[in-house]
Image 1 (cartoon, rainbow, N blue to C red):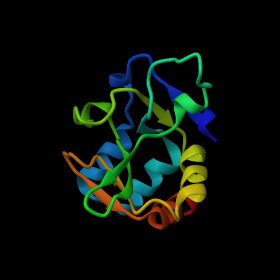
Image 2 (image 1 turned 120 degrees about the horizontal axis):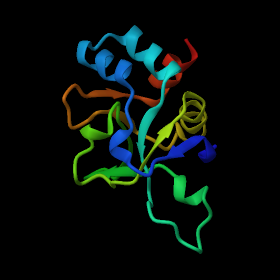
Image 3 (image 1 turned 90 degrees about the horizontal axis):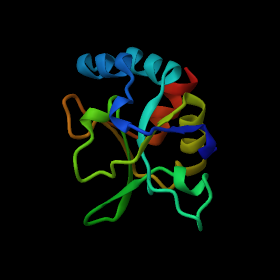
Amino acid sequence: MASEIERADDPTLLRNPPLTDALQTQDMAAIAFALRHGPTVVPLATGAPDADRSEEDRSEPWVYRASPTDEPVLLLFSDARFRPPAVPAAAGAGSPAWLRAYLDAHASEIGAVFLDFAGPHPLRATPADLIAALDA
């Protein structure tokens, strides 16, 4: 599953313009289309290669734990430029197949998914919402 995240040497070049445009208008059909047909920028839990960790381990998405509930929140971006400094700089491009498989495997653990949570046009969804969009 994690092998479908394409790691980027320069994460600032990662983007999905149709997703950015769809989030701007909050057009759910366009958001679903963009998720099905383009990559999603995924912050990675660890960026630097480490001899003790496999490539798969180094390509796991970073999951935020929201206080005070400690609810796991998956943060995704339409453009790496929208990633705030508090989010790890290491990022990759998650394919639609990767996103669908990840959500399917972790839907019961993830409380919410935020797209571009720091703006300019954030969207909060449940894993089930995104699975439905990917399957439409």
